[in-house]
Image (cartoon, rainbow, N blue to C red; front, side):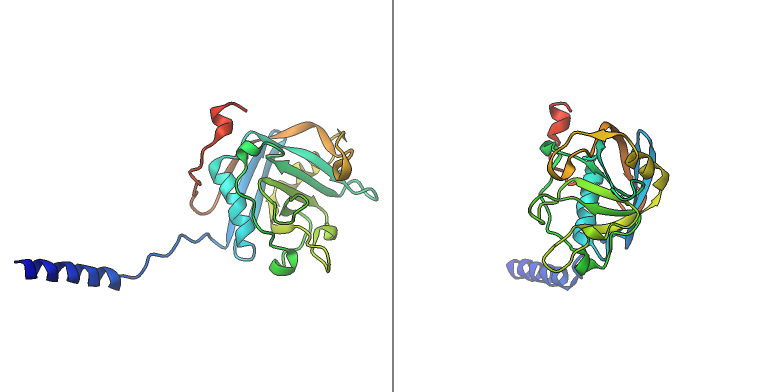
Length: 216
């Protein structure tokens, strides 16, 4: 009886080892996300193939609802032609919403340039400090691309619907700020009311959401 039991256990182990390992869930090559703002909706298409780390980071904020209730708070207009530039939104300095910063995927690595409508992650002094703030470009912004001696920023997709809303935000009155953001803070920030995936399966991180526990 004992010999039969041992044999059965051994057989079960052999069968288990013969089964193919389950593969981790893979994102579609392009994942669209809709951002519903107080000025209208914007849809971005994320390139998960060429910028997997950056796209996954943004999707984690979307899937967790970490961007809902935040805002577009910066409009950086080109001095030579204020119709062009970029807007910036996200968690700003609300670190209760922040996830672990990610490494930079520079444009020299991904091949995704800061063309018209590009979505890109903002970062601080360290290029590997991007978290939950991002930009949307109006017109090409090649100054944000990587070049020798300059890491640049990580573009990881583009706006595919709602550029009219992006332009409206860029044109809003600004002031305040300091250093690189001097004069660029939107006087009445545009609320991000809702964020939702349009492709793939949401995968929330399961992490605690302190901004919901203790108020916004």
